[in-house]
Image 1 (tube, rainbow, N blue to C red):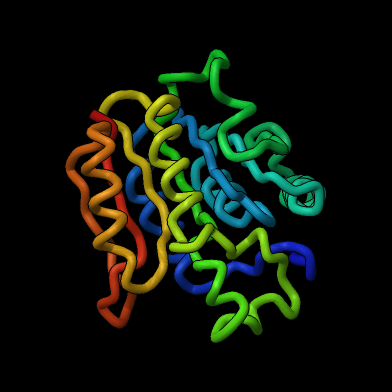
Image 2 (image 1 turned 45 degrees about the horizontal axis):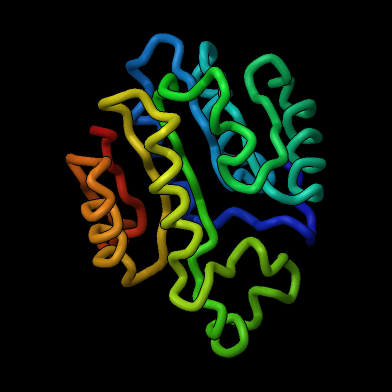
Length: 203
């Protein structure tokens, strides 16, 4: 896959997210997936490569990401299974004919508090865009919107799966529980035993 300086570069935690997403969906015959905050399209393309019958809406807000995503889709010959969409999160998908029909929403959202990008995490901005990391004063502004709107697109009983920052599992659990839209919430830890991915099923 191609990457560029204007697009988020996938990390190891995103691989954990990808494997988790694959496990959640591999038994569904013709799964419909939304990959929100797709970036270069690494998750969308990986899932489409592993699941020949899948259809993935790969969504990002920036022109740079969508341009690179389209290159990767063509490079991997996935034009029939991965649909690139430029949108502010779910805006372009809400009130469409796919509401209530999605089998999985997977997301690697920005989750770093703005103040940390000016201090200990400042080096992240040397080669990657601020939009890939910054998520309000507490690092949860994008996650809040993903939780709220993913439930509109998902089928009942289907999962939302997303990555979050180290130490954020408590607030992520509270946000999901307080939404009253999800159940069977569980966390997936990395090789160090640190929770980095959450799975929650639409009620």
